[in-house]
Every structure is written in C-alpha cells, then in structure tokens.
Image 1 (cartoon, rainbow, N blue to C red):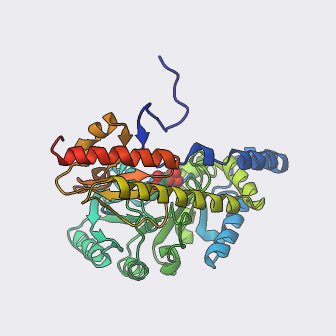
Image 2 (image 1 turned 90 degrees about the vertical axis):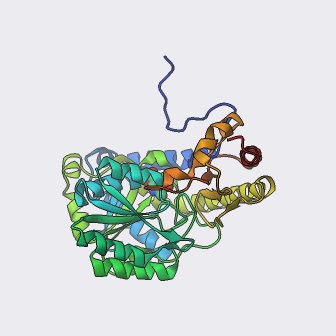
Image 3 (image 1 turned 135 degrees about the vertical axis):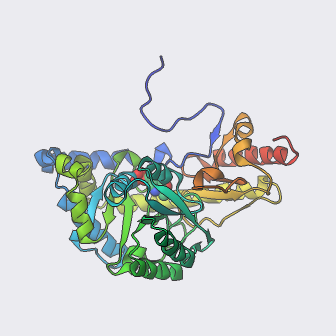
Length: 389
Ligand SMILES: Cc1ncc(COP(=O)(O)O)c(C=O)c1O
C-alpha cells in the first residue's frame, strides 16, 4: 500500500493540471506564518491552546474590523463578526441552522460546484436562477421566491459568489447589488454572499458588498483566508446580523468545542498585528495578474476560432466556451491523454447546462506550464471539432 496522502492536491505525471483552483505551493507563505506562530505562542501560549471564545478570538475580530475599515471605509460592529473555519465550514453551519432537508436553495447558474455538494449533504433542493455577464437576474430571483412560497416551498436562502466568481470570473453589477439587497429585505430572503475572491482583483476592487448595501437586511457575507494566505489554515469570517451571530455562537458545535479553529485564529491575529498580510496580498495579486495574462495570451494563440472566454478581472479562473456541440465532459479523457486537464462546465450547474464550457485555473502553475497547457488544449479541441469525440 502506498503512503497515505498529506494534501488534497493530486498531481498526475505528464498532465498539466488546469483544473485545480489551488495556489502555487511557492506562494504559500510559510515564513510569515512560522514567524507569527512563534510570536503568538510566546505572547499568548496558554490562551492560544485553550478552548477559544465561540465568536473567535477578540484580537482577530478587532483586526478584521480595522482591516475592513481601511479597505472599504466601514468597520462592521463587533457583534456582527464571527470567525469561521473558512467558507465551507460556515456554509455547513448555516445549512444546519437555517435549513431543513427538502428546503430550496437558490443558486446562480453556473456557481461554485463544491457549495452544491454542501447543500446536497443537507438534503437541500437546488433551484437555479438565470443570469448573464452582469450577474443574476434579480427580478427573476424575486419571482421565483414568490412562486415557490405560493407552492408552500420553504426557501432557505439564496447563495451567490458576487466577486470574480468561481467558475466564471464574473462580478455582480452595482445596480444589481442594490436591487438584490432591496429584494432580499422586501421578501425576507436570506442571501449568503460568498466573497472568497473579492480581494484578489487584478485591476480594480469590486463594487461594495451586498452586506454593506443591506443596511441590516438578511444578508450574510462570508470571507476566507484560504485564497489570501493559505487554505490549510481553515480560517475565515462571517458578517451577519447580531442575532444570527449569537445563534451560530450558541450552536451545539461551538458550545461544545469553543471557537472554530482557535489556535490558527490566534496565529493569524498576530500575523495581522505584525502587518504581514497586506504586502503578501499585494504580491499575490501581482503574481495572479501575470499568470492570467500568460494564460489568456496562450488561449488566444492556441484555441481555434469559435472558442471564447470571459474577461478575467480578478480571482483564479478563466471560463471558456467551446463551439456548440462539443461536450467538455466527454472530451476530458481525450484531454488527459493529451496531457492537459480542466473542470468540465457541467459540474457548476445545479441542473443542466455548461456542456460546451470548461474552467481553467491559473493559480497553480507557472506561466510556461500554462502556455503549454493551452497549446495541448487547443490541439484537443481541434481534434474534437473534427469529430474525434
Ligand atoms: C467561491 C468559493 N467559495 C469557497 C471556497 C472554499 O473556501 P474555504 O477554503 O474557505 O472553505 C472556494 C474554493 O475554491 C471557492 O471558490
């Protein structure tokens, strides 16, 4: 039997993996985390190792408030902030507290495919809201909520990724944010805003968050250190109305175990106090921008006419549309044989759609590999167009 794996990423020899939305290992900030861990243990040793406060360590909440004020001009009040184990843990907790099996969750089409897995784990039914390059159609979402409720369906919440989304890279337009915040308040619809990528803009920051526009409406904003620092930290934050923060803190899991991931939260609080996050994020942004440019240039060179992709203004991904009739799921084995992998578009849809789309990540590999991956992909698409698949 081979050794058990240490990490989730599984690279296959000979295959250029454009599917994994993970950060390049060379960009994981081992040194600054090590320095912060050493300092945190020296300064807060026993407290770092105790059960943590349910809401998260006060030092980290204070740092997050100050950071949001610096970046966005408004600090959320402390009773609206809670430390989480990343977006995934927060979503699972919110599903536990806010939904019952059989409830409906409204999602974008396409959306972050692994959030769909979490919703499935909780027995939730997914209903896709149509959208376009400017984000979801808010009026349609409102009409769907009314129609579902008229049929005695419970709509637990609407989930969306408004900034540099996974998989499309798209960003919800400012006027749709206003409209969605107003609709959520009018309908009493909880909206979960997954802001995993908002800080990883390549050109300019995204418009104000739904949470900020909601003025106390039922919006929940989730952030994560996975994309900014390192996913192995399993650390993020939630902004929500004080009564929901209290409910989360009073949940059985937190009552029993204390704050989620307290030791890491203590280390990251120290890292923020040391001022080590901002220079790191600035470097990361620059690196991502360069890799985006390399991949987009290579796609323009190697993909045949009829292939298109969305503008990429932030985040990790390029969403590529192949000519109609091609099926990226059926084409994947051919691509892997040719030494390149991607995520087929269908995985990002709650029901149907995405057959001729695929997602490429530029966060993991160096420019030369991105270029070679695009070249191999171009050859595969040409073969597929000739009817090989
Ligand atoms: C949109 C989106 N949300 C959440 C996550 C996972 O976040 P976390 O590591 O904080 O659980 C990802 C990771 O790919 C993502 O793309």
